[in-house]
Image (tube, rainbow, N blue to C red):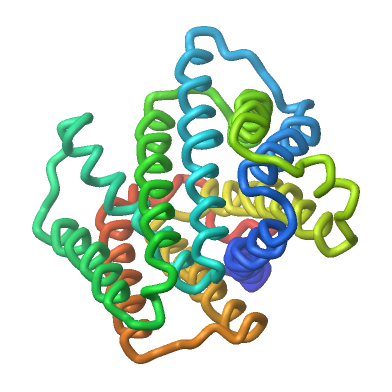
Length: 294
């Protein structure tokens, strides 16, 4: 991988890691469901030029939008809000990988070899080990909610495997456009203070929202898709796993979150398990030359 592509991969991982920080900052001011609604409203508007109707695929696209947009991000932001921190959330969010494999076995009848089976056990076992850390006890509600969020994202990924001819940015645009209204309705039904939150929001609050919309969604997903067109997942997986590491580092540095030995061991076991799952699931390298530069 040439240096420009390596820098893109590192930048995307750092962006995704910092998105946990930006989300926490935003959720310290905005109600969680309202913050989710604002995110998707802005994503839908920003990516509206990419909205393309693909015949025969729109029903699945709608279910993906509801699963990923409404359910996944609702539980994710509720989890970050409940946890009050980002380190445990960043690690727990990696349960998407083992959940996806288990659902592929159940729904798609895929076979799991002993290596991926070991990866699944390690991923779940690492999170459980982390959960027994006394420091994490106060965040267990958040960890549980993020675990549910990971499950819904894995359902969305299984659905995405059934969709054809829907580009990455088009999918992001549809998720934003379809999810915004249901999220706003949920917020109005279960939360209060939305207008006051908008009136009193400062540059940092709006900056956090802008980051998860522009940097995380547009730049992050766009950059990763660019790399996926040129490299196999086996090459990108180790770099992608830096995202939760960045998230933990940012949480420790910016919020002075404690980093115990048990947390380090549990987080390492989880990430190693996720790495095994992704590497064993990786497709062969694309035919396109790896030597291309941006």
